[in-house]
Amino acid sequence: MKSAPNTIHAELAKAREELEQLHIRMNEFSKLPLKIRLARFREIIHTSGKIFFLNHLIHDLEEELYKQPPTTQEQSPDNMSAG
Image (cartoon, rainbow, N blue to C red; front, side, top):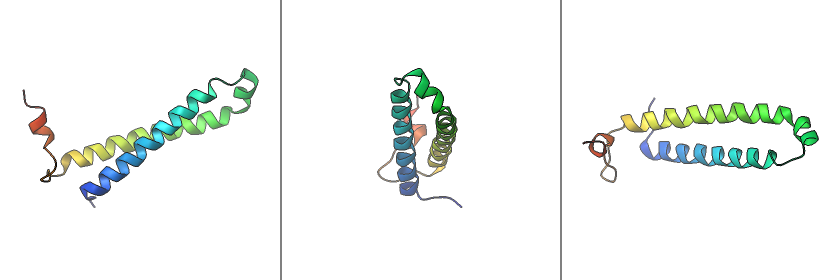
């Protein structure tokens, strides 16, 4: 079952925002003292798995969006890559 383009855009924006928030958290985590970083190792593993999942979700949504026929407000990716 295919999603409507607006739904795909919304899901894609949400996934990108969540991915950005995870990157920010990981950068903040790297500034902590070593002892605290070691204590939170499980969180890093969980977060890394989530980033992997979100990257795949974004890719899948972009692929689905690419397959959608362009609306009057969008240009086809084929038209933009001519040259």
